[in-house]
Amino acid sequence: MRILMLGRGVIATVYGQAFAHAGHDVVHHVRPRRLAEYREPVPMDLIDGRLGPLGRRTHVRYAAQLQSSTEPDDRFDLVVISVGHHQLQEASAALAPHIGDATVVVLGNVWDELDAAVAPIPADQVVFGFPGAGGGFRTDGSLHGAVLRSVTLGRSGSAPNRRGQEARAVFRQAGFTVRDEPDIRGWLFLHVVLDAGMFSQALESGGLAAMIGDRRALGGAFRTSRELLPVLEARGVDLARHRTATVPARFPGATGTALALATVVVPIARASLAAHDDPQAAEPCAVLRDLSRTARALGIATPRLDRAVGMVTRPDRAV
Image 1 (cartoon, rainbow, N blue to C red):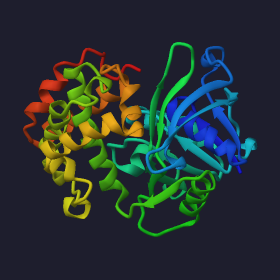
Image 2: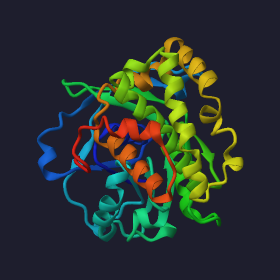
Image 3: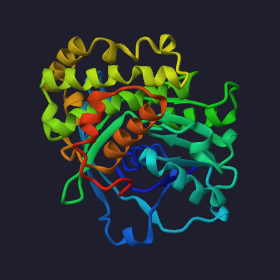
Image 4: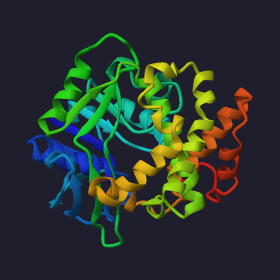
């Protein structure tokens, strides 16, 4: 299968390498000015959850195929978009004229209504999901992070179609398990809320990496997420349907204690936070500001979130 990955960021690189290793023809679309900045091949130091229940450390070198232009004649079968939620509409609009009949997989946070977030890409071509990977690039260009065995996928429409089947097949061929989420809209919105809690606490702690082993900080993160549950309900999310996923927000103290221990003793949990030492990164700041705007528009008080937004120094929408 011929696969186009948008960009060569952490998620695109991790999954691009996995797809290429599984035998697919993978191309990364990057901006022209970025071509000269990337060093190929990129050394990857990952805790790989596909290699055992606690993951196993691996070292690979990935020589990504890079190109700065994409045309319909390229005939990609699958396009993977993984950008900050605040960049999704722009990225979708730019790609729409060039993807032909390819299945599009959106991996990442989404806070707008799903179909609107990817317009003008036809909704029936799109599969939404969230990656089980994270990390960061070092100054030498190497990537350090972790990838879980599982990935969550779903469609904005209830009826299954071949797009979902194609997306699931690609991930499974690369050794991942796929969790199908019937209510992907509600699940993604809930994930943004959980992320907002972590991002808000990171501003106070000095980064996600600084929260490793800190039960008070992690508990505080989920208390902020609990404060945001009424925002989800006001947007029509059925929280009872996602009862398991809301456990961290409903029981922040216990979850913070458990996660603090996990980030110390479980390599894959530690690695998922260790590379994130910049609390003023673009996506975290955009998440906090957009949730704050939504809460204000709905008339819902969010004092913990407001305090975090007040600590953001990054210009609004700057990338």
